Length: 261
Image 1 (cartoon, rainbow, N blue to C red):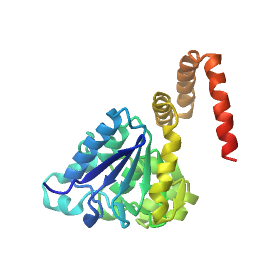
Image 2: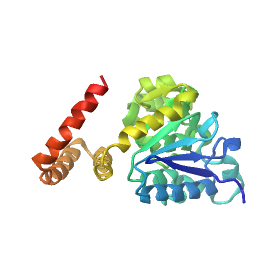
Image 3: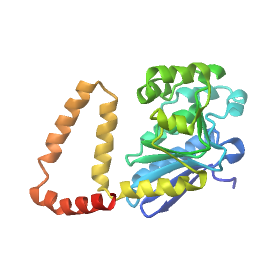
Image 4: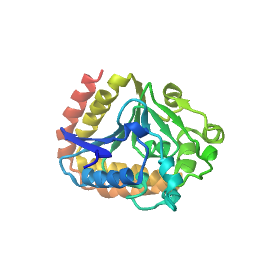
């Protein structure tokens, strides 16, 4: 049997999902995309998993995007750039997971790989990480959301600069622009991501899934619609919380806050 294109390791409530084609810069081949969808469904359905970390094998690449060799040699392969199903569209594969997904960006995230990175809920980057949108240089219009998401994350003029030049964005600038939350040394990437995941995993999983959905659905509509959505969901959910439940959790929250300084 050939080497698995996506690896899955579950420990202490955290699933580590690794894109595993380092010899091809973890390019998103058809087989890898199908396997990623399978793994993310498994993560979503596994009640022992509370948080997922998505990373790439090796230090060179998170993922270089769609496998251009495959696109150039197989008739119809370019249709993957507009695929809507999770088995062919890795962004949909990630989005189908109701649990938080931390992107641990270990190397370059290029074009479709950039789109996969920003499909994650939170990004942590190694100092080796670099981001690039080369859609214009390859002559392929993005179909997995980058043209709309990136401008909302870093501002329209910065997004246009990246997309119109195809230039690379280094990890520290990505942090300054608000694209990634943290930048750490390569050897610290997974330990840091695991610590962040452990913090998330300490939250009630049902509440976490509901909160993630509220943020994502509100982000996809206008501000006014998002506020109305929050009011509707908040009113229904909070009406079921008892004062006793709040009091029981208050001490733990205060103690944790003191521990964080």
